[in-house]
Amino acid sequence: MSFTFTTRLPLSRHAVDRDHLSRSVPGLFDQLWADAATRVLPVWHGRMLLAPHDPRAGVRLALLPPTSVQNVGPRVYLGRSLSVDLPEPAGTRIVTVQLDDDAAARLEPDEDRWVSLRTVATALGDRDAGLFTEALGVLNWHASHAHCPRCGAATAVEEGGWVRRCPVDNSQVFPRTDPAVIVLITDAEDRILLGSNAMWENNRYSLLAGFVEPGEALESAVIREMFEESGLRVTDPAYVGSQPWPFPASVMCGFTARLADDQHARDLQPDGAEILALRWFSRQELHDAGEWMLLPGPSSIAHAMIERWLGAPLPAAPELIRP
Image 1: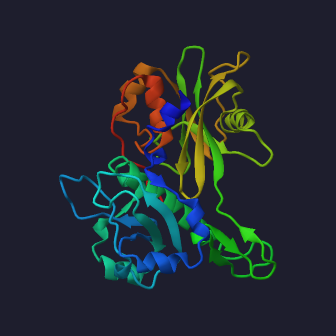
Image 2: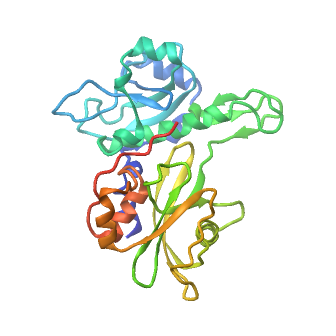
Image 3: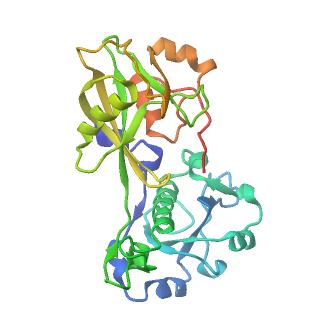
């Protein structure tokens, strides 16, 4: 059940063989740049370039020949395309590159063609949604790990962009992903608990979530985080599915949980720092709140989890876009 749920999530889709054995090939990028069949996925400030509109092909990312991209920043070998119904044949090797402002402007000055992942996640096909998510996550890591965490020396990029090595002690730094739990809590009446975050508009509500701490099991994080944010004890955490969330470097692990028997649904205590408001919603109340309340956008796992509980599609809601 969980994997079936996960494969429906917009950012969990993929149609790329990451081809990890090729990452250690000597001179990999020289080979890729010499191959006219290689395709490059440019990234600029977390945004990617859309291919020219083609009503027959739908929304696609622009995959360019290596000669069209110059003076690039970090490069990462993403792997081989598996799709058979796209202009690039199956087996096409794909590299993502980080562009600065000048390089992006030379490549495409029309900023409207540069799009964020959240705004196009549900419109892209499996391959391009997976490519965008993979590329954004690993380039975010490069941006924050340019120096050795032990001594501060500038690190060198190796293994097709998947390792950074310290020149002082020869230690390796690998891409990191920070796990977070996101939880659909129900009470004895099968209502769900939604909260409004201090960083959002005051009419935007979503499921409660928090990061897993070192030395902590996912289920323990569910119980701790829900108590910290709501003042309520929950029980029976059950895994639902997961979705990468490269904003900047998370994987969201979805759980359900129920209000503990010794707790009252009315005993809500938002922490006042991160969570400013908490409310219980029945299915009918959630439906009726659609006119005033903003719910999670369709690229999020929260959106899919609420729909799963509701048993019906959620009304369209704008994505929450922050740098």
